[in-house]
Length: 151
Length: 137
Image (cartoon, rainbow over all chains, first blue to last red; front, side, top):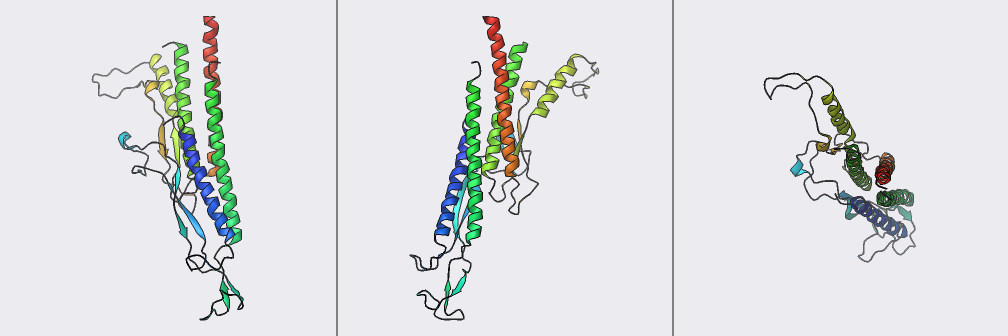
């Protein structure tokens, strides 16, 4: 356990939360996109996270000392996943991207982005970011007070 | 071991544990949104108190006579310097639908508490040194 472990851990949390914010921005910006470069409809992205652990983690409190992998190393983004569920359908036959055949003829499929959900996720991402920033601030104050010993 | 070195050593150990606890809480908070992540806590103070009490008891109490080393002792003496902080994974509980059991607010409070505790310890450490300084002047 080094001196700056807590700062490094909080930094991983901050970078993950800012990636989440970027993904939410992309979803909101494309909330009415009907075409994408690869031809399909725009689908919303979700960030999948995982805890960083190099070694096997034992799910019990009695880990032998030589199998102990120490304090965790923080969090990382595992991947960005596309949610391929059906988007909302709006009846607009004059739209160039309106569906031409099948039971939904005349409807336009807009992306499956729910602006309200995205805003809620944005708030929780920025709160988590702030929490990690507070951890770094707190570490700094602790080290400062340690440097005052003997003065 | 005189009272000065003992105090400095005890405060030093307590500060180390505060740093460890701070890192553990930072890790819990960073992983507050990760599915199936379980929180970790640090146990130390109770074990330290037990060791210090055992020292006190060993001094002023009668001891059972035993005829073999393997017999159960009435009082066992633990040196407080052998007490190590223990990290405990709270693996059995779940508070979120995704299997995570980190309470972000509680964790933030823990972080604040640890931080203030550490600052208190540094002030006490400073006090020890300032007293020594008065003597040396």
